[in-house]
Picture (cartoon, one colour):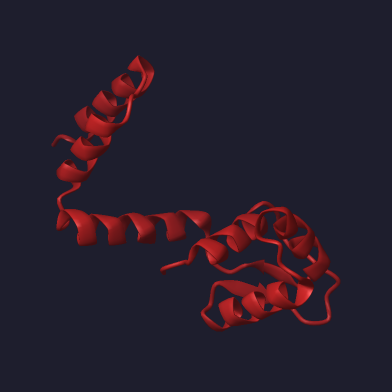
Length: 119
């Protein structure tokens, strides 16, 4: 499931709680995206059509996430891995490690994870 940056921002609001009213979502997004209630409603309706948002009509807080953050993050990682690294997870990890500083604690955690993965 591919999310645009705007869709990701909207989903972050929904993932922060259980159910939301339109004005609550609009208030959360206004500082970063500057959206009006109409724009938020349009996005919510479109995203509901894609199966990303649940809308329970007749409720005071009708909007909720229909997909988990974990699922969306997994889909984004899979797309990046396939598109940029041809499915080679080791190449992706190596690139991140070469370009990003990690703490000794993170390094140890990665080593433990790799050791646990060995059969």
